[in-house]
Length: 353
Ligand SMILES: Cc1ncc(COP(=O)(O)O)c(C=O)c1O
Image: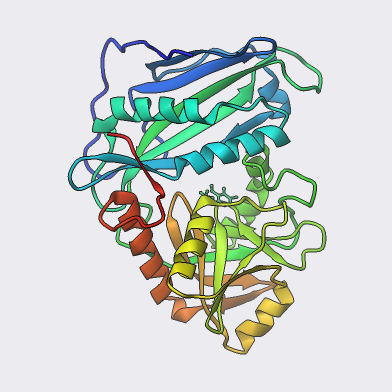
């Protein structure tokens, strides 16, 4: 399939100064459509702008939608590179299977993404911690009221330049462990990246915010007895010299950052266990003084040190509410690989131009 290029009449002013997260978009977007019997068609890179939808468009009613999040970086010598975007597209197809959405051709879409990013390379910020955030997404477009699988879809990739998640360097966060609401259960959509998972998590996030915490750490939905993940990232614990992270049991998102950090730690000779971590076991280990570091892992922040975790009225404090040495070292190494200031022995980086 060829990709048509539709040129914008006028380009936007590039931003200067501090960049927000998620509110500024570049000049162009990639889009293609799917029709049953015809497959994906009409691939084009066109000016970024509103799209028109029928009010009965199925995604607006039944949330048949999936998305991804990855980033492009500019290296100090001006080259542009992606980080494991092929793994994001593979995950998009796994989400597609779960939501009954047609798969994409990942090689074709990766190529389209590279073309789009190359066109928009002047939008990629260069200050430390900044990047060009990439949001691919697919949604159901049949104008139909009734629950069934849609026969038509739209795929888009939009780009937004983003500032550093932590402007003054890493900062420990405070999280609330949720006991009332559930994010998902085995057999649900927890391991898919679909909008519905996030809509369902909002009430718990609001509750965490009202109590003064930044995010929710979820327990498993069925028994609320073991730790799963944070609302927007996976979680890693350093307990008694070993790294421990919840195992992928179908209910948590298999994070690309999680997978990278596990490989990185193992390459440093560290022990990493992927296993079920009971909340009672964890609280016990905390009281024995064995929990050395806690941090979140995800594309947006890369590493989020967790200084405090609130559970049933108690604030557990880790590493004196300071950034742990491993959180900092992992952050520096991973950001260095992503920006091309550190070697990439793992083959994670995808050159664009
Ligand atoms: C619920 C959830 N878990 C984990 C992650 C981390 O995944 P990744 O490292 O691929 O960004 C994200 C972010 O995408 C997320 O939304």
